[in-house]
Length: 343
Image 1 (cartoon, rainbow, N blue to C red):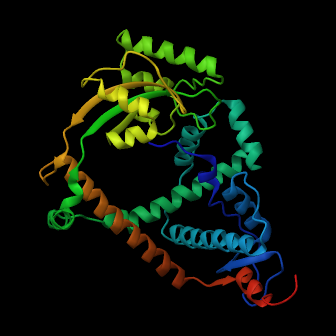
Image 2 (cartoon, rainbow, N blue to C red):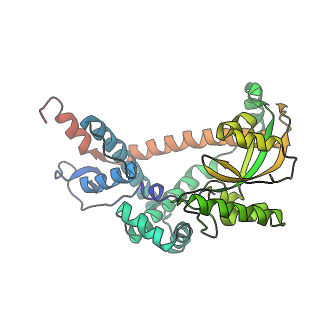
């Protein structure tokens, strides 16, 4: 499971204001969904969250376009939240507690407080967004995900039309433990073990390699101490990779992989521009044309078809839900009204 990132969690934060009439709104109201208002203050906060520390666009048109995109997402989320509430699908306190504990557990208390300060958020803000995220997930699962099926005939049809894409190059199933020479904001290992300087990183990598060589399970060590946020929770697993992809990461990794036999861990720490790697070869695949009887091919095709259906249905569901709501986008109208006028 990929780690939760603060900016992802709060990207859809929706704060509602007082109700008003549908025909008019104060200058601080940028949109009205049924009887709920979104204010300019709330929108500006979401724009800052999406920028994640980057500067605001300097061109007025670019800033307006960004605000319109963020506002559209906020409107859609509010509509889904209202539908979920009507279906009694709201997140429970226990579910929010679990999500929050999982999220906060990725950081030391010091780093967690730094993140809140950077984003100008409170713990309650984060919990509120988690509640809304879980609520929308429940609605989507009930109305969309649970209804999707992929048949054997669809899998065969997709494979037959795309057979050439399963003529694969030689590939290597690898795992790694990464130690970076800088402090990591998205640390995802179980021990919260973070090297902050090149020398610390070099010593940590040497220590971890010795642990693996002494018999400790590679996956356990990776989960405990690897600083790669995407692979650490999976025991360092990088899945099957063709040699070209490994070389694109760093030629030294490719050369090291080619020297390994299945099940072996490279006998030395490998230094790249990303940091210090401990590398293990789990499997090797000769490549060539893969048949539909290959379980990996079936899983890949099934997931591809499922993903396409899921995205299409989500888009359709969102649009259909919007059709049932009364939405007034005051920001869009004001932008149109100001066209041609001096700023």
